Length: 183
Image (cartoon, rainbow, N blue to C red; front, side):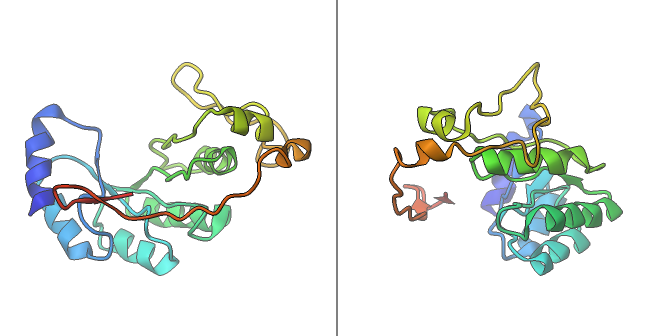
């Protein structure tokens, strides 16, 4: 119900899409939101198995799927999922986890995906990232250019690694004051 209310409230503003308006494990609720709004629905970044993405695609529960290459099986698996989505006339907007490695992997996927729509770009341009990876991908005239260096186009500066000690990172669920959940 909250997803439907939100979508209907946002309709006058014509957003490009509404991302994950329901919990990812209930495709019927996603289908209900999709049926009750004119906003394109995007989902799938938390579909970490081929089976969960297959169900999302076959049920046509979203207009746009968002496979995450770093958790759903890598580049080839993501390209296969994009091809499956293409059979159902569903666009692809790969999810990106925030590192230059994952972004460059996504850019390669984007370049070979006929139903590619848009690339999420969530990369912190920090001194740490520049030290470790050299130049961080940058938007040029509204686009992220495809890397032209070998492999994924990312090279780790091994001399800089010792300056940054590893730290444990635990992703916690953030529960907002209104009860909504975000990451």
